[in-house]
Length: 199
Image (spheres, rainbow, N blue to C red):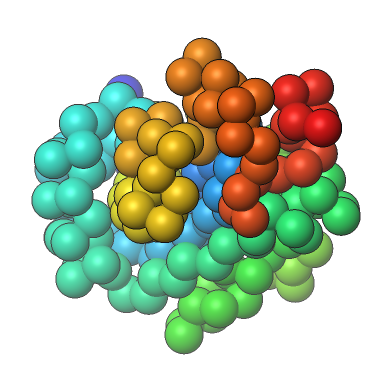
């Protein structure tokens, strides 16, 4: 698969600063949703950029450092669990992606988003189903978002050791659900996601 096909098509239409946007953490019971926006140079391609879920943690961390170093611009934004509970995860993800795009120090010409999200932004955009594996720019965004969120969940694991956040990253594993039933919720849990186990 040519991971630069979307970018090259847009180059041909006169767009040069193409931003990829992706989110990490829509499904977990705890922690924020994190979104990254990245504008990558297309004359200095980083080998191995792919959907972050397909890469080992070690590979992601290596690529994360390279992406941040080589990017024309990048930003990471998050929406905390309390806001997710107020506005729902779909709206929180959309807001997070919008914030990430608008936080870039250089304004993009065009935005590619993973999935089927349409953002409330003034820049032309296209959503790409499976974009983190199909587009170089979106893949780069998925990697830096995942590395950032995983590090945050590791920190929460130290703050709230009962839940094993370093192992489950907030996702609803059997051990995590058992810990919620036994210990109740901690401040980084999403109340709207955990009603059936916490009282």
